Image (cartoon, rainbow, N blue to C red; front, side):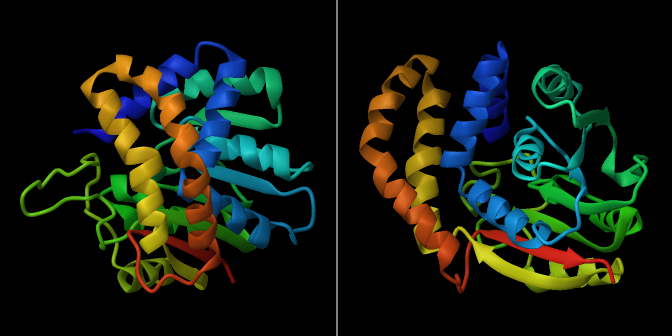
Amino acid sequence: MQYDPIKDKLGVLFGRHPWLQLLFFKLIDVLLLRAWHVHRAMRVFLKDKPMPVRILDAGTGFGQYAWFAARTFDCAEIVAVDIKSTYLQRARTLFARRAPKITVAYDDLTMLSVPGPFDGILAVDVLEHIEDDRRVLAHFARVLAPGGVVIINTPSDMGGSESSAEDTQGFVDEHVRDGYNKAALEDKIRASGLMIVASRYTYGTFGALAWQMLMKVPMRLLNRAWALGLLLPFYYVVTMPLGLVLHLVDVRRANARGSGLLVVARKP
């Protein structure tokens, strides 16, 4: 099964009206544990920046993190870039009406042309899709202002893409690598000229269970038949309370291992 096509269809469904897009953002914020980790990192590492701050959302996708940054940091200027034109058009339409301080633009991260400097860069579930990740990290280092931070969220090599010997594609098969080894990713970041300031596993024991409950089971239902989506509100009434508790535990504990990685690096 492919994860991205289901996600893309949901994006089209919720992209029909601005209030539906904002509802979609809220659902993503609640249901995806990575959003909890990324939001926390943004608050911790960007809150002490002198305002106004300039933030690059590198690989913005639907634009939910650009929207969160605009809502969280009143004096922020956000540049949201991606290579998927359909994503960009929906985000551009929404932000033109609701968040004019977000600029939406096409850009290829391996040839990053948007001018810096930036005080912060978000790269959420992006690097695992790009073969030449070293070039991307070098561009991040180039456009960061001195003291600027990059927040990277990506699958780890501990099952982040959920591939196996029996199922080489797994649940998520759009990645060019199965996941990053934590030390290897840190070495690549250092080689770009950045220094590591925080590095942790996400989706540990509790977070992995929440992922199964809140995301994987519903996605498999939708993959079978979209009509089964009518059952999801009832499903979430039962599973949501436990899922949110599991999210909270994963965010607050130091996971010894996990299928996700969150690394924060700073430009000297």
